[in-house]
Image (cartoon, rainbow, N blue to C red):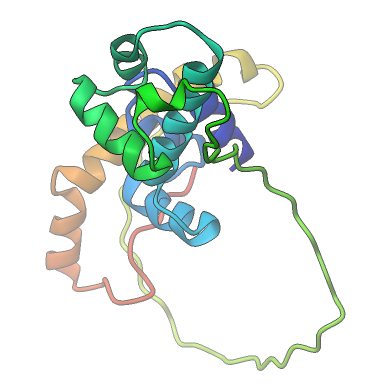
Length: 193
C-alpha cells in the first residue's frame, strides 16, 4: 500500500490509469478499490481528489500561478469545475484562498504502519472439508528469478497482466463459470504465479 501511495504522489498531476495502481498490489482495479476503501476509509478516487485539491491549495497560497493553470495541472477541465470542487472542500473560492490569514484544510498523504499484537485470545476450530474442485487455465510465461530479472520484472509482468485482464474482462472466466458451475462464495477466481 505504501508503494501505491508513492505512485499516486509521484503522478498526482497526471491522468494515470487506476489499473496501473492496482497492478502494484497484484489485483484488478475492482478488488483493489474495495481493499483501498476498506483500509483507508474512503474510495481511491476520493483520496486522489482530496490530495490534488490539497496540493492546489498549497500552490494557491504560496505562488503567483493563475487559478486556471492550477486547475489544469490538477486534472480539472475548467476553472468552474475546479472552483466548485475547491469551494466544496475548503469553504472558500480559489481566489479567496490567496488571501493572507485564510485557513484551509489540508488532506495529508496517507502513511501505513503495521502494529502486531498478540494479547487477545482467539477462539478457533479445525474443520475438515471435502474435495474442492477447481478448473484452471494454464499459461507458461517462462521462468524468472527475483535477483536476475528484477530490472525487467515490470516488462515481463505486462504479458501476465494482459493475460489476466483477458481472462477477467473478455469472457474466459464466464465460460469456465457457466460450463463447470464451480463459482460460489468465497471461491471465485484465483491467479497463481
